[in-house]
Each structure stands twice: as C-alpha cells, then as structure tokens.
Amino acid sequence: MKENNEELIIKDLGKSYTVNYKEIEILKNININIKKGEFISIVGHSGCGKSTLLKIIAGLVEHKTGSVTLNGREINEPGTKVGMVFQDHRLLPWLTIKQNISFGLYDISNTEKERLISDHIKLVGLKGFENAYPHQLSGGMAQRAAIARALVHKPEVLLLDEPFGALDALTRIQMQKEILKIWEKEKTTMILVTHDIDESIYLGDKIVIMSSRPGTIKKVLPVEIARPRDRNSPDFSLLRRQVFDEFFVENSVVSDYVI
Ligand SMILES: Nc1ncnc2c1ncn2[C@@H]1O[C@H](COP(=O)(O)OP(=O)(O)OP(=O)(O)O)[C@@H](O)[C@H]1O
Ligand SMILES: [Mg+2]
Image (cartoon, rainbow, N blue to C red; front, side):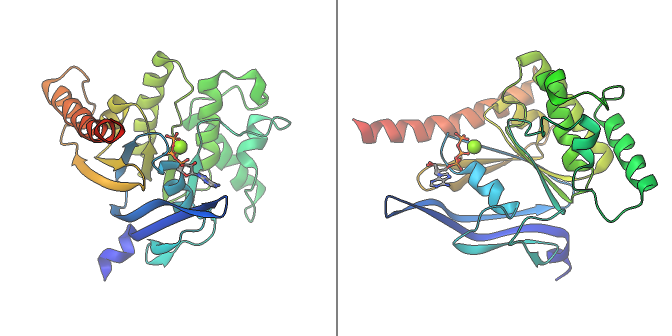
C-alpha cells in the first residue's frame, strides 16, 4: 500500500456534461499514476477534455465515475495541496503583485508570510516588482506572478493549463527554461497541458496523448532524453515525429469519418 501514499492516482475517471438536456461524455476510462515529483505533459486536440481533467484534479469540477487520490486521500474539493495556473494569469487587477501572491495565505505569522512571499518573488524572477500592479507587467511577468501565487502554498501538485499559450515564441522558450529550474528546485509534481509538442517533450518525463470524443488516454510516451534537452538533437526529433504520428493517425480516422 506504500505506493498509494506516494502518488497521484487517477482511476477509471469519467466525466460528462449535460448540455440542452443531453448528456455528453467528455472523459472516459482515464487511468494514470503519477509519481511524486514527476513532470507530466498532456497533449490532445482542442476540446478533448484536457482542461476538464485538470479541473477535476484540482477539485474544481466534479467527476462522474472513478476517483482521484493524492497520497491516498480522495480529492473532492479545491485545496492547497493542488495548485493551478491557467492560460490567462487571473491576477486580481486591484492588488499589487505582492498582495496577489499573499492572497489566501492564512494561518501563518507575518514574518513567515513575508519570507515566503519574498522567496517566491525571487524564485520567479520578479524582484523589484513587488508593488507593481498586474497591468504594469508584461505577459510573461504576469504568468510568473501567477506561478508564484500557486507555488507559495507549497502544493504537492502544480497543474499548468497552457500557461505559456498567450506568450510570444521567445518568451515562451524562456519560461520553459524557468519552469524547469523551478521544478528541479521545488520538486513539485507538475502536470502541464500544452498544444506545443516541442514544449511537451522539452519539459515532460512522460507525454500523455489524449484522443477525443470522449477524451481517453491514447498513449503515454516516456521521454528518455537527459535534461537540459536539445531541441535539435536526433532523439528529440525522433520523439517529435512519434508524437505527430499519433495525431496524424487520429486525424486520418476523423477525416475518413467525415468523407
Ligand atoms: N461547463 C461546461 N458545460 C458543458 N460543457 C462543457 C463545460 N466545460 C467544458 N465543456 C465541454 O467539454 C469538452 C472539453 O472541454 P475542455 O475545456 O476540457 O477541452 P480542452 O481539451 O481543454 O480544449 P482546449 O484545448 O481547446 O483548451 C468541450 O466539448 C467543451 O465544450
Ligand atoms: Mg483547455
């Protein structure tokens, strides 16, 4: 049973939404065991249920069947053990960066709070911007603040839902390097949803490929390339090809159906 206490376990998970009195199956038979400290990338077509899956893990959305357990405890509601970063930063515009990061930090002394905030502002490279407001930051800086806000609660699992999706290509690559450094330092389990295949390979220990309607796990590809990964290396290119091939197979099935 020790194993169960060290993992995020998603077992036989299913989810449906009711739209216009009709039940639509969104996720089906999702089974994943994620080890403590693992970095998981999830890729899949738009609408296949990636965000829904993350929201269920965060306890923000109810599931229909199966279970999600962290360290042996079922997740049924939001809590500080699981943090989430969205595509848009979702910082409160009327609060400074420091106030945004400290929002929700209760039950600790002021000294401890100051230390935690200062550590996390440093961790995401925002020193000097403590008193700035969200609109005074660039997109990348605002996302860093959102990451700090999630990490300040010391979550065991950090869920990242296309966190760099709205950033330009160069900032995006910079942020990928930074999140990798943070992961190596904090050892937080990370689950990243991305549409960027290179990003999924650059960051993940494993790539979970989802199929659509309903969303299921189609394939899990381990990334056995030493970090920091070189996007131009033959191993990287080979894996990129494998991930694309998985998508291509699904696409060809869909177009056969349409024709
Ligand atoms: N609250 C809701 N009520 C009804 N249907 C919903 C709700 N939220 C999501 N859906 C539907 O569930 C499906 C999966 O949505 P989800 O946002 O999880 O997809 P996704 O894989 O994250 O897509 P994308 O890559 O575009 O972000 C979609 O068909 C969507 O319309
Ligand atoms: Mg989504």
